[in-house]
Length: 254
Image (cartoon, rainbow, N blue to C red):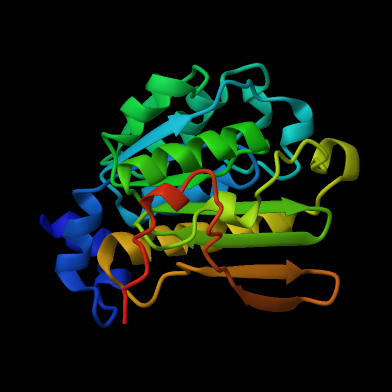
């Protein structure tokens, strides 16, 4: 590492069980971030600032005035610009060492599988179930870690999935198609709530990539910001899960 890199990342290098080795692991990592809105904004900014070497930024939307209340990676003068380009400008200014790859097309089928095959971890920051289910299926097939978050009104949730056989996946948490899911366009969302959840997602990404601490694998954190109460729930494996049940090892015979 150069002297400038040691200085830039000095505060996290000082952390016990992190050090230069942890920083090198971040620099060698590639992460796919799906969605550059309220959740994806803090995720992308913190991962870039932390020194993740390569970020794939996926979003098909353009910046809208209504986004700016919570999507802090964007700015007023970028209204009408692709979110991937707006995010690239912010992240490049934040840390020019990070390689940024913009992905402006829908992530479906072979396209998604192909991208997942090139990364070390996926962060789900999108706002619809079909994309979430597709991301989950691709990660399970590739046995790749997935960090997932969601927020609406004054509520939020965050969890992580290992992608390994025998562990739960996102479809274990949501076995149905989610057609009736609430959206912030209809119900609203308090801006800092997405910041809280996105920051936790970024923390989990860094932990998983560097081996720091214990990831949220198999646990779901729920936030009620009206009272600032947190709950932690265990996520069991669904034996009938249409995605991961086929990869779950059979129970051992006595």
